[in-house]
Image 1 (tube, rainbow, N blue to C red):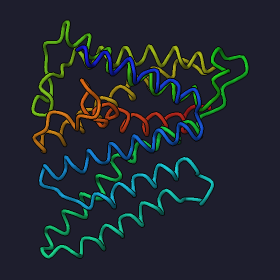
Image 2 (image 1 turned 180 degrees about the horizontal axis):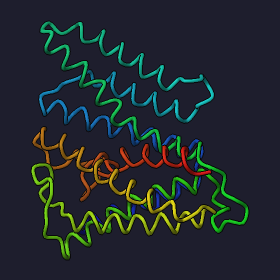
Image 3 (image 1 turned 120 degrees about the vertical axis):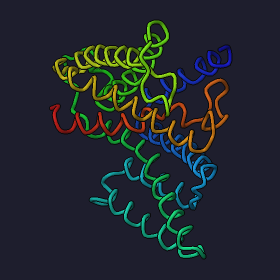
Length: 275
């Protein structure tokens, strides 16, 4: 617990500074996090018996993130880069003598790369989110910082709410074959916490807080699904944590697994339904 507190005391201020600076600094931070998470993913996949072409997968994930940071370089470049990555992974699989090994390596490479590359939606959210009105309480933050702050606090509020409620009154467990500690009460507590936090931040961003009635549960469920998805990978690999990078917290992927799924969900909702 002491290690966790010390690590959090160091990491949270760093994250807030990165968010405050935004722009290139934020993009660089997401790129670094993606590379570290990708290293852990391919290590886990190898332990689970699904060895891909790690170097190729890490490069593909990084390129997708960089593409999100520079969206105007080439129209539709994200899909094009994914297509090229799939092709290169397929060509690399030709080097495996056994076609079964080749197919497995191909699938593992593409999966590992695109899985962590979903973090690129953190950047895309900041670039595509609506402008914060001049009379909004959080107008000074701007669209990029304001909407990414909403994402970050929403995920954190889910984790905190689910943990506190689950620990205090959680009795009914679910999906115990993936994560034995998850409870329905914790899930409900996390959904409520996320919905309240998103409603408050929507008001701060000059938006109708009623969006939180849909965006709150969606974000909470996406965050929980992201956590469970990583648990599937770790259980298949026989690992407790994705790594040892952060004392008391495990690896980088352990810290961002909820964002992997929550970021694209929030981005889609904001782009489609919020003006």
